[in-house]
Image (cartoon, rainbow, N blue to C red):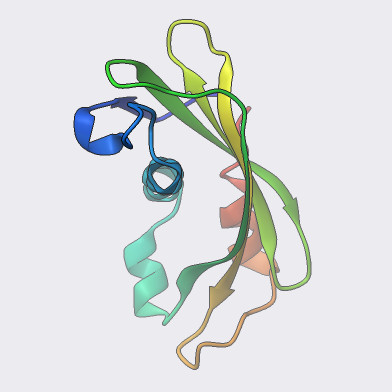
Length: 134
């Protein structure tokens, strides 16, 4: 997977033991989701249409501790699409070795002005499929 986000781990990312706090991994994943969305989708157009991106489930596997001073990269890929939801696969990798520190499956919906999930079809589906890494 390609990556868009590189993060230098600093003290404020860490817990008492010097490891990245589990909640920070979610922030790292979110940072790259936004970078991926902004690089492929016209979010201003979505906003004008009353559409929004909403995460409904995240399953994270913590594989190896990341400590202060290390640099990680985050990769996001389009995994699959369902009728009203889709799934992204994300990985946090050590920059030097590309060893996986954590991975996640992120289920999301696209909502309309009423807050209801819309069907994943037509132009919307094509835009979302553009998130697929080659």
